[in-house]
Image 1 (spheres, rainbow, N blue to C red):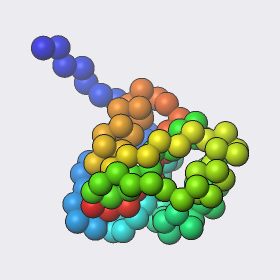
Image 2 (image 1 turned 180 degrees about the horizontal axis):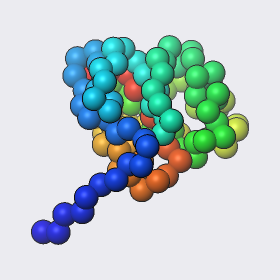
Image 3 (image 1 turned 180 degrees about the vertical axis):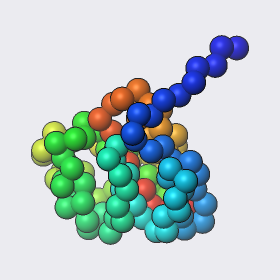
Image 4 (image 1 turned 90 degrees about the horizontal axis):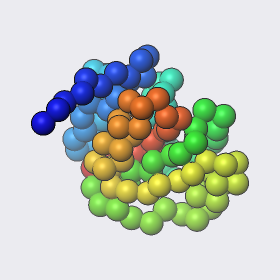
Amino acid sequence: MRLNEVHYDDSKPIDGYGPGFFRIGGQKFDGAICAFSTGVVGWGGYDDVATVLAKKDDIDVLFVGTGADIAHIPSDFRDALEEVGIGVEVMASPAACRTYNVLLSEGRRVAVALIPV
């Protein structure tokens, strides 16, 4: 099997997660977060679309991690993002972390909004 070294430039990948937290670039963040190629901020959940929209010019796709299991997100949250041209992909938080890391390593314009497991 051939393995390739992964490079993230200045972006920080998601190193891990656990009950109530995420570890990104070696730093622990408690609670729900949004991670962008430029950094990490706290996220107020589905009522907090403003946190994502503040970075709308840097995002093509937002991965939404809904916790331990996949769940539906509110349609007004999705609609607000799609209205400005941001694609929304919903999945469980562990899958969202992995997908975000892969696309981030490819230099894609991605972000992730995560609810802890």
